[in-house]
Image (cartoon, rainbow, N blue to C red; front, side, top):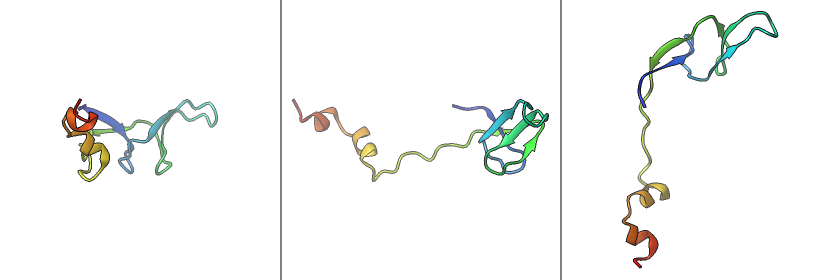
Length: 73
């Protein structure tokens, strides 16, 4: 995946949610991390995911041959 994602302009978190204004009359966005409210989010490129740690079972299974996983039948 690539492209820009909406983020909090204060802390750069992507854990933001639109607010309807139903409870306090203020529409806009709210950040779940720093609890700031604002009218419009900022946008940035999506961070690259670090990848799977080579010491995990999931990594080892992903990189095994099918014969090693199934017993070679």
